[in-house]
Image (tube, rainbow, N blue to C red; front, side, top):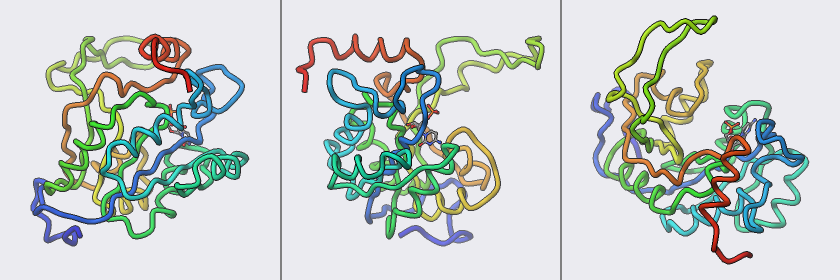
Length: 238
Ligand code: C5P
């Protein structure tokens, strides 16, 4: 179990911990940018949905005790039928609403991983690495990759404000892993962020970045789906 707030060392590094690991998979997005008829997580790649691929990778890691799927309300029954070994709940309007719905179903988790169904090619080793860092005592762990493009901060009309030093930047992915009490506190507040780690940062809890994997890219636009299909070329259908 995690130490209560106040007793925790300030670098986010606790003693080694054991405990139950629950993976939440938010899959309730509509996938508007993909431009297909069905919600993104239910799009197929070589005959298997993005969601089914994500569930398989979590299972194959061997480090997760329970999986909670957060899906569009109208698909809850179908997904329960397809994934009877998981807990399935309805998601909300925003991703953070969906994560909160998953947290409510995560029961007595000690460690929680949040993984976007849309990162369907994420290898099992990414889950293992995040859980290993959490077990080593970190409160919050995210995989990230160095940024290859130079990034500019711009104002509303596109005028460049500044150019952050690229060497200090990371493009972060999922699975993002947390001590369960930390993630629950992060989602109890009113802060906004585009990922779970952002909410944890707002609490002042240190977040550790570990090496990400290029295969964990998020399938967002049609180009990403084409890329995923190319990467899977030759894989057996089924
Ligand atoms: O939209 P975006 O690509 O950022 O979504 C990331 C993940 O969060 C996807 O797997 C998507 O299904 C999920 N999501 C969700 N509930 C929402 C919006 C997104 O579960 N309301």
